[in-house]
Image (spheres, one colour):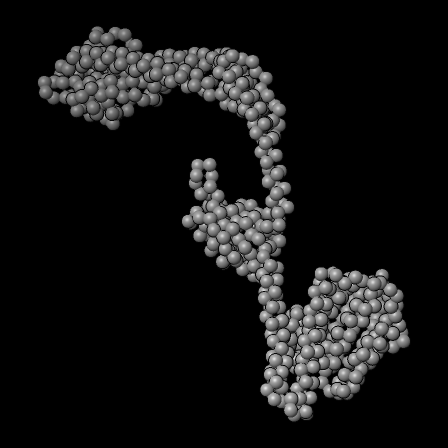
Length: 589
């Protein structure tokens, strides 16, 4: 505000100075013109008078008579008088010897006089050493111009008078500036001080110091402005408190929402995202905000729907697939943002991640389809062979026995399948209680291998048990652990060709307090594309061979859930045609 005060003071003083200078220049010019006009008239009369007196041939041609005649007509030497013939030769001059003067044929006033006009010129006189005004008139003898009479007078008095006027003007201007600066400074201070106070309060308000008030009690317009500022500060303080509270509530809601929220402006740039969107898009919020939605979202389908909502200002809901940073299925609601004027100024997008829901729906659908398919095969066999027996095949004892054996095998298979489904359902629902006890791992593996040994011998498979150093004890559920090992061994026997081998390893990791059990076979292996799905219900890599082995397709699903119930992990490594390794990791405590 000090700069404004100086600016105001300098402006007023500048205006005063400009007015005084313009007035001085005007009066100086008027005075100068008045002097010059008077001087011009005086010199013109003097020159014409002399020209009339010397126009006679006997006077103009005789220098002595010429000098006497001039002195008779103009005895005073205040005006310099010069008589010049038409060739520029000076015949007489009352200030200098005529014969010592140079030819005047090139003088502008002389040239004008030879043309019959009154010549006027202002210039510096080398002879006299100061500025002079020259006025020349022609000397006429009849109609012929025989020469010219020139009168001249010094302009020194005029110049001195103008210089004195300028000196007086500048002195007055200086005094005016000194007095004016004091007066203007006081006036500007009285004007600026309230403005500075109002500016201070306004600046404090911008820095959120809403309690600041203007301390001015004047009754004029400045006082009214101060009162308005105070009222505004009070109102703004209340409004900002309410806005802050609303922002806190909105921020809390957006931050804790599991659904993503995006606000896109009418310029198609992202203006707001919540943490859920950062998780869905795999990009921090500060890198998304301000970008075009098609650039930040990296999903053509999502951007297409946003543009549609922006262009048509309609509310709708769509299911969108995104593939970055990972494939997801989103249920997205698009709604135009309408401001208080009823104008569409952007789009609000709400994203719900329904990937797990769609995956569970697909798993349920696949499960129903697989159960139906798996149940249909044994039921069809039982129904077909039963109908065959009822139609007369019972008379042939051998055929009847074969059919009944098949019916018995299919019934057993159907029973195992239903039992596995029920067991899997109980395991998933945590309805099987865990009976924790001390388990000797080597004894448990040996007893499990004994159960599967007949099947292995029929296929001439070699089963290698862990050595004595693997006699590890742990606290766990014995039945669950045995079922895990049994299902993995059954799976290895089923998919290992005749003459192959199965190796069971057990290792104690003291650093991490974990037990690792590995079942390694030399079987047909699992293609890489099928590995992520082998723990799904009824999923089979080789469907025909799985059915021939008598498996239900639920063994690995049961193993996975049992391992999770024991707070462990299971992973698989396999190369097609070279065998498979299942690794189960369980905590020791």
